Image (cartoon, rainbow, N blue to C red; front, side):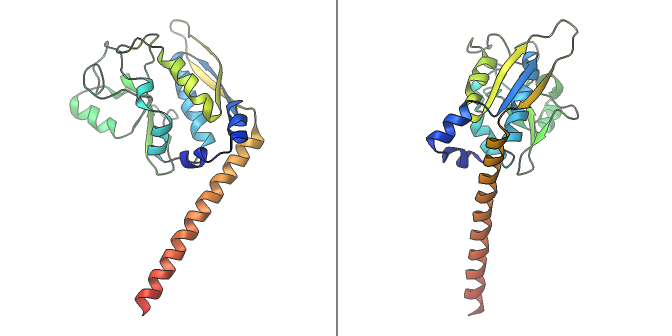
Length: 206
């Protein structure tokens, strides 16, 4: 399902969506954020990177902490955000920065959108944002509830403890229905392309 399909949901479907389709149980703030992105991609598998960015605007988490230098605020004018494309790996390497300090990059901790763009999730989530003073993770939790993702529990990890997250599908019927909407959407696009191709072939044949 794409953001455009989401926007076309009926009021009843949106109401059902806000009651939750996938629950996230997180341990540690940053792993909870990782779980949220995982849940969104599972729920909207046909999202492009730009659509995912639209769903997760950079303003949710505008700046990274000051304790490491990065490509983002407060060291540049670029918003830190929730997700960034995998191409920041090369930019960090070029600038002598450690991408692992700012984003999840380990195996199994990155994702791909339908247009084959790697998704890196921001690793730092402050209790008070460096720039705005707001609670970034709570802003993210509140924001994604409209898309069917609910964080029902998250706890701080103990010192030297390992964080993590678990996902629970609580409305498989709606999840399947959303997937069918996606399939139909792509079917119409495919039919449109075929029709245009056929018309073009007929014109060239003349």
